[in-house]
View 1 (cartoon, rainbow, N blue to C red):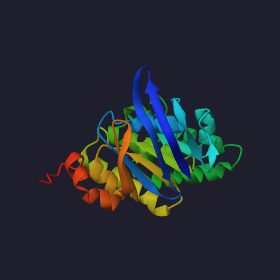
View 2 (view 1 turned 45 degrees about the vertical axis):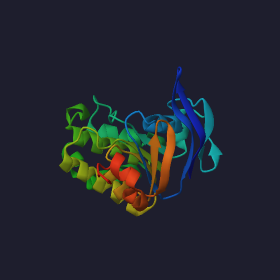
View 3 (view 1 turned 120 degrees about the vertical axis):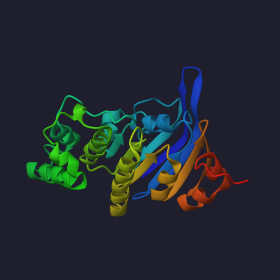
Amino acid sequence: MLKVENLAIHYGGIQAVRGISFEVKAGELVSLIGSNGAGKTSTLRAISGLVNPSSGNVYIDGKVVTDMPANKRVSLGLAHCPEARKIFSQQSVLDNLTLGAYLRFGKEKKSDIETSIEEMFAIFPKLKERQKQVAGTLSGGEQQMLAIGRALMLKPKILMLDEPSMGLAPVIIEEVFRVIERIKSARTTTILLVEQLAFMALKVADRGIVLEQGVIRLEGPAADLKDNPIVREAYLGVKTS
């Protein structure tokens, strides 16, 4: 479904990602974990076309999209829920959700879009309560729910989530991860999750990838990584000696 091949990313003279390769299979949830500055967000931005890699390729459904503009990648079913949410803060909650489905207009009935909105309200009841509210006035947790809901309105084949727990209270983080598990359980959306909270990320994932200073240090089944001494000490805060 999603393949990254020898991807390298530079910002001027600084190399953020150093020739990494990995795949995410259809219906799979893969968590990309690592410390700040490891290259996680840069990797997502290169996949979605927001930054140009200095070398390597990105494939969606076997199609090379490396030189494809970001908006064209969205039309292939790639949704990117970015770090810090990036909602349309001056628009209402309902408008944000509707805008998430803009590529579906003209292809589907209006009632289909409305059904999707109701589905988002079922997943995120607080958004239904606040559907007429200006999005920028929502709490941080509500804004994160809106950002995920807006991405899901595309009916994406691939959903990339960048630090969905950032800045949220523990109780809201648990709620967000319950939603991620719900999306995963349907097995209709392939998910690439970047998350600082390694334990939470590996708990919901099928597989994990540990990125360190722009290279892949470890990868494998999430359950195995949770038990790996290196991961436990470096990312889960568990002393192993």
